[in-house]
Image 1: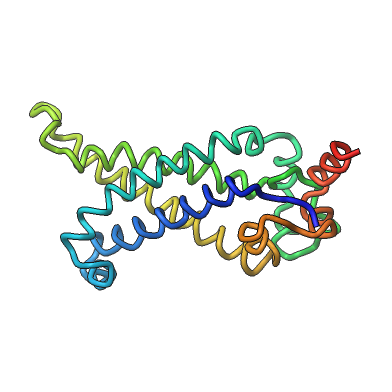
Image 2: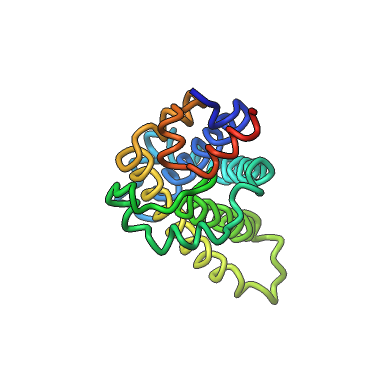
Length: 205
């Protein structure tokens, strides 16, 4: 077994996930009356309204913390572009035709950047809706724009989140366990992230 994620990386990941799931549930409750039962489960409308922006701040703070941990690992390079061009082989588990990857593959990096920029868009647009009294009278038109940006950013992150869960749980067994326990087998690492695995071997010699 080799270490895939450190303790701090796992805490950061699950903090980000928990904050995002709360904001997702309460945000959907506010978006349509058909899903308001989510707010009821989470303590009611006023409670959800109070905690939604606060957990949004926690989510963005955790995303920034994650960026400090992984910024070098998520830079998109030539091997990632090759992976994205052959992503069908990855989706169909045709490992023989998947280009070797670093610590994170091209799909994981696209997901990361979608969530990173989505989080910043959600935060900026959400702040304008959170404190409308501080928006100058001449800029009141910006609030409907902020609402539209907030909804579009939410849709992007929701789509990315669904794909992330599907790929991590069903397509690549062992990914979720790695984020829980922090370790993977050498065979798993060599199969899914050979460039990273080779680098780890060189560093340990």
